[in-house]
Image (cartoon, rainbow, N blue to C red; front, side, top):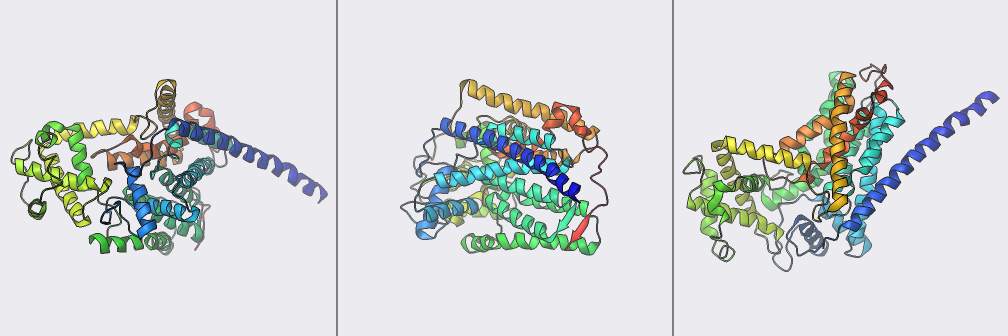
Length: 487
């Protein structure tokens, strides 16, 4: 008995120290990365700017001061249908609690979310390699070095918290591979609900997580149904209040924000301006904000309700349709200005733009294919690591080098993982890459829409460095029958 009691601390203590040391190293590197790029970013974060950061701040101010989800300032408080609710609500909440309009509290929250995302990558890698701390440490270490991830902390944007909810969702899903627990299923449902309220473009990915869990559960139909219910009910409970607000304010039960038509048309205008030359000139710009828009909105309604083709020719819209496209775009983008349009007009404009864009795509498949290819290149390679502040010189070269090495190591590592039948480590990176490309490539896109993939690509980085990492746990099959169900 005495020998066993003496032996226990000798075995446990080194593991605890080693684990703490790993976390400490990751914390120091990640925080250093965040602080460095925060110092580089000198962008002026003003509520009067015409960008997403200013719009989120204006919505938060109106929630705090008037209880209205609106991007207006000093004007009629129209409901804003172009942005999801969670981030402005969180920003308003931090201002309410702190009693100040400073941005530091939300940045601290985003910093904690970023650090937790790194932690979750470490834990995910640990579970998928059956406890290989070296593999998990290398994976999380590279994630902490990526500038694109560190720069999600400073801007007033949704990317940082989206990384947190997404990494937590994957962590819970992976943990459910070996033990199905009610608490974990409920927490996963809640997390996915918050992910949707943070960034609705991830709504379809819910099916991926549920399918992933069901595949590994391999239980009776009753248990599988229980798993689906325990995930979906908490998710529905989280998003239902926003669904009801949408129904009241804009007449739609959809939890997603209004954006598809505008993003499709904006992508076409950016990558194929020749097809919309009439739109691109200065006609109609000076007087559009002051004219009577009612006749134009009536024409939009007619086009939206009609099943007929919109364009008069293959590559160009008619002059009247171009006028409507411009006014519809103007109506939509006014949500970024201090005096937005009523929500019903924004929704109508977006529906009209969607129909116009889809018609152009059907009649210009080759040009659309080129646009999609260009967007894929934009997403995959990206640009500046900061959203609004340019980085130049050696710093910019370093960020590009880190990103290039990530792709090289991910490519090599994925091939080695597949050959070694360790596909579990490559599943979420490959799936997320494919998902983000499918969702964003057909329309207006920005490099920041793809950074979520960077975090999970690090799961294959250690395998890309050396094949010796794959030797650990080689005989442990992730498809064993050692599963327990606690429902």
